[in-house]
Length: 177
Figure 1 (cartoon, helix red, strand yellow):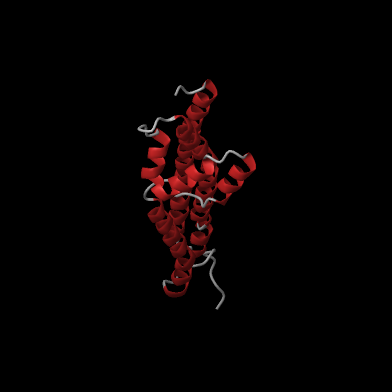
Figure 2 (tube, helix red, strand yellow):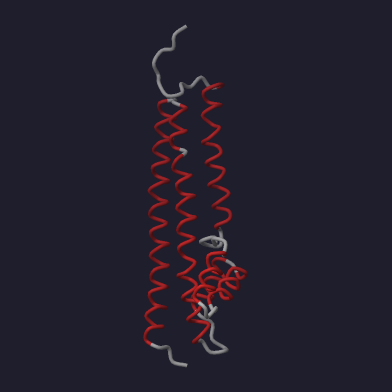
């Protein structure tokens, strides 16, 4: 079956928008990682434990950005999967469907496909809004664990450095006896 022009454009725009979102996600996360490394490096160089707490905002910001972008990808992926399901032949496998199955997960693809092919717009919207945010890539679960571990260490590390290593908390001013 030939793809109508509107479906071609929507499929092309879905793929391009998803690619753009991933690219922006990587750029934003790179900036946050560099900012965190700079903050931690400054805190270590100055031996100021409290600076490490200030740096905690960056891993938490990365987690928020991941969730927002993951949520925003759901309707984009649903549009592409819906077009592929409606116009692909029985032996044809769509690029986006294959990508979602391999890069995210096959169960997520099935949930997305069920929601995406609903004909009623309110039902489709409700079904898509109920989907859990996908991991952005196959190793996303491990990235989330590492991010959580970094945030945890940045949260409790300053306390130990202040109490047991003799670091100052925010200021190197001499403390009164």
